[in-house]
Image (cartoon, rainbow, N blue to C red):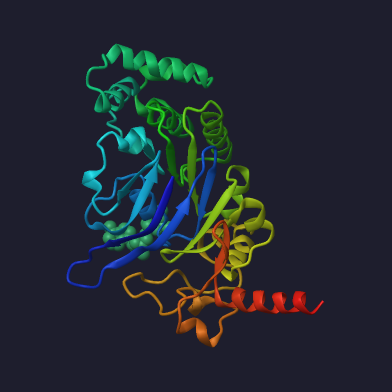
Length: 332
Ligand code: ADP
Ligand code: MG
């Protein structure tokens, strides 16, 4: 899957639009787990909505295209996407998935809804049988089909929703902070389940979104760091975690390694403030007001892309560093 130059803004009454995603491109190969990291308010869920074809007003897609399985569509006209892409090509696993479920319906009713939304000729009994088989293949108890949401633990609910939302074998599963409401052991179980879905080839790619960057080393092989609606840095998990280049990535890693949860959730190590109000994004590099490496040019001009398609940082400081490093190499 490739998405190119996605721009998605929220309409905000008579005021300026919220530029929540502003020129994001990315590629995910078959078998990949792509991690997307960034603080709260950086546009991750907005990007998830666009990629899962679930963007609805006030969120408006202003630009960008998506390619998958040899087909390319403009994301601006989501209505023109083939109907069955949603769920069959791309599926979304939201943060508290089961909360959106009707509490008076059993899990089996949810299964029937999901399957029949795509193929109304499937008999309810066949849909339930399909789910039973899938649960067993994944070593989950098939009796959950008879349960009501409140009868399952939070962790089991999230696992069950993950299984059901991938029943149609979507090409891409987009998991938006899927474990943030779970305890540590349920988090691990969900991550294991997602990996198993990939190994069994029920899905072929995962986009895993989190504010907890170090956590991604458990699941992702590629990582994109987002700041204020843009890509700050991209690389393999090894590169991002062990050799971060962008000052924002540095800060994100240092602060999320802090054992104090309040620090992890609310501030970046040595960097004050919060992501900007995206109605009025800072000029030049959007990170410049908080950046410990800020230079004069950073507030004036958009940062250059330093590196290659699969390994780059968008940063003036990294650009300067690369010139010095290049110069030294040339001299020796
Ligand atoms: P993240 O998932 O990284 O926390 P979001 O995609 O939820 O970020 O939000 C990105 C930006 O869009 C934030 O500035 C947020 O305040 C804004 N935003 C989110 N939802 C809406 C909405 N419905 N209307 C206006 N602005 C919104
Ligand atoms: Mg979010």
